[in-house]
Length: 134
Image 1 (cartoon, helix red, strand yellow):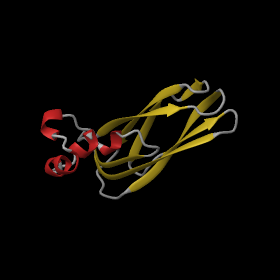
Image 2: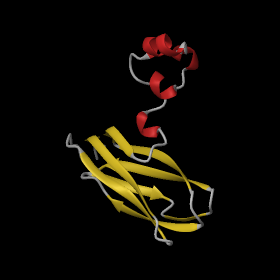
Image 3: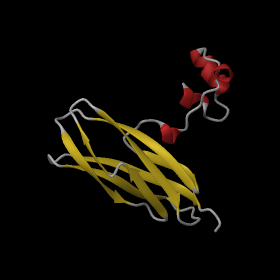
Image 4: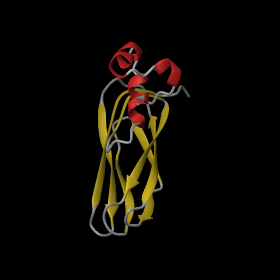
């Protein structure tokens, strides 16, 4: 509901279909903050941090982060290596920084390489990049 209420002009439609008053809840969430297995930022204004909660559905494993950076974007992931037990969850923080202004869409990804051979891919897409003036 927080995502739906965060879409500009959606409050009357959300209320019509669900009976939920967006103005009372006043909690909104951006689409890039939904815990999806991908990251999309439609307007990267300097720097943006998104988080992803990872749940291990296999056996104990240690993962190392590998990056394929989108054009004109710097990506930092924390932690860069972690161990995760079966059923455990870990929070990944992803910092995206625009290197220069661009309206060209760019694509990359985050790969988590497990020591037991598992590979987890998180596609990353950024459409408009606005770098800070230095």
